[in-house]
Image 1: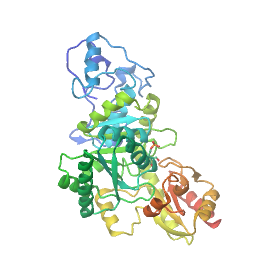
Image 2: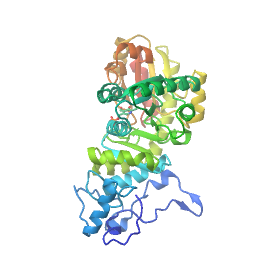
Image 3: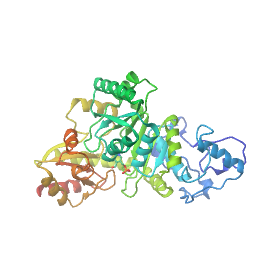
Image 4: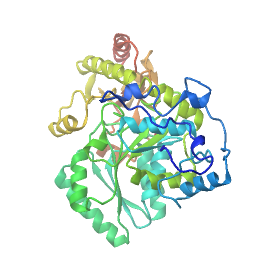
Length: 440
Ligand SMILES: Cc1ncc(COP(=O)(O)O)c(C=O)c1O
């Protein structure tokens, strides 16, 4: 949210944000963990309330007709750069704007947008950039609903896709983008977007973002399509994809950012030039995060670093135990990568291994079910990134709709159990996994 200096009566006073947010002290750039406590909010504007109130309103009163017109010029794009006032709760609101300011800090992005779910963020993003005849290039696997949106929904509007395995090399990416370019030309469209998910759900396979960026620049030009990446598994702490060449970062805030398994939301972050067209479509379609959820997310952002650090430490300890267990066939944990290419990508892109990983139980679905049904602390539920440990069997749950052939190709087997480790005592968790494996 920007300050404005125009002299239209009523324009400045509708803002709930401090005019000069403090981002540094004595030349020291403040860290995100510090900024989460107050950035973008001034208690003086809300009766001294330390925490931002929840603004439950569908619309905002203008202080003058001229102010209303000025704000609408921003909403409709008549004046570039978006609106600088509060207008109507399908477009913006104080809670969402403070949240978006704070989200952009983590990824050092110019701008951020909040949504009612991760899937809303992804759908509105893709609809913004894809037109009939276009090709979308994406890594695989993607979260099943993202993959389904591309294959089953965008296809209804004449958008086709090409996908590539997460670990693809620069040479493979060049070849693929050449093919996508030819395909788009034949369809009378363009390569509209390169969409990545890294680490991928549920395999934890990493995409070489730097190689994707170099390939895009070489084959499609630096002003080619945006590279968007779903950073839900490692963000915002352990991977900052904008620093590796991505243009847009995508989150299901439902996961680590929300962090308590009590809300559903999503976000996008990136340069304003990429966010503005998405904001315009969000204004039309709706799908902005509601004020209550935005407030809860601000609460969550205050502890996101603490929670993620603890969950990461717990996961390392749990994986050490699981790796040596005779009933475990293998692990898909970023702290124990066996493939040299994947390790190289990890070293260049990630600062931590996360707390969501896959464990391959010796046997098949029956043995995995027995393991899941025997757990007593870890909860049997889809989702991840919460304070509590969650376990699920993607092949039978989140990825059930993925055709068997593609599941096999992507390594989503019947014995791949996905575990999202929370912030419990790690030795209690190990005791739980130990007794559940004994029951297999
Ligand atoms: C990697 C990833 N991206 C996106 C989503 C969708 O997010 P939401 O459930 O908030 O719509 C999920 C949900 O599990 C996910 O795991």
